[in-house]
Image (spheres, rainbow, N blue to C red):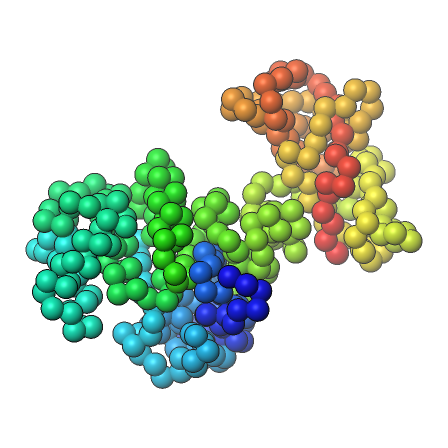
Length: 355
Ligand SMILES: Nc1ncnc2c1ncn2[C@@H]1O[C@H](COP(=O)(O)OP(=O)(O)OP(=O)(O)O)[C@@H](O)[C@H]1O
Ligand SMILES: [Mg+2]
């Protein structure tokens, strides 16, 4: 992928109304060839509707969908260079695994033996070589999901669309399938467009992701950009864990001085431009440290969870200006126990400020 590549999938001012309900208000997106792209957002924000407009199962009320620079208006789903993988991947129960995978090739005019050969090739790709003669019902959930994936990949679509494909699997299998999906993506040429409400999955898998909220895209970027430089309080809160504070900003020559918690909290400076007045401040749990003497705030540890490589604390601050603060400390040292008091500092440069 080079920065000059044309978008393989482009959405231009796309909107979708269902009667009185506006499922998608306005979406502008470009997904590059070879990219693993995720669309992530809370339930009901319009992800599936967006995906269905790309695949052609829904028609935009406004705006256009382009695939490989072709306007998709009036192009039916089966003619589009896309395939869709669902959460409930109904395999044909009366067909062998191999026949399931080869099924989509029939329409493309492949003969029986070619279909079989291709099916075996794609079963190998999803690590199921030798499974062609099995029945779907004799496979585990994860294996069935991989058969569904092979079936979607077999006619080599430019764009593979996924709608929460792993959410019916248990946690361990889901983790395993994430790794597999990433590997399979590396072996294929096309773009993967992956829809999920699970921000952790989106962060782990994606080259880039779009965060959607209430029918609109709030931010598009790499997982790192979105985590480090969230564009809004919504994004900061939805992606990863964070603490949000109300604050007041005063413009300075190099940025702003921000006061959190009405004279009873703490202050910091930011180099980002922030207008005078009320702001929201996001501080990630890992952006605090224990302070020896003073610190930015003091409080009592009301909960403590040891998780091996890190320890999570919930702190009840002395200042009434804040609610409980979540703090994560790395490493094996856990110098503060539940019920004890401690002083905390906010790491330099860590707070992100929103107007
Ligand atoms: N065919 C339809 N008719 C009426 N309203 C619809 C239709 N499809 C979706 N909606 C509404 O549009 C909004 C967006 O739905 P959509 O399925 O795109 O959300 P989603 O982000 O995929 O949610 P989830 O994470 O729960 O799957 C919802 O309020 C939903 O109720
Ligand atoms: Mg959905």
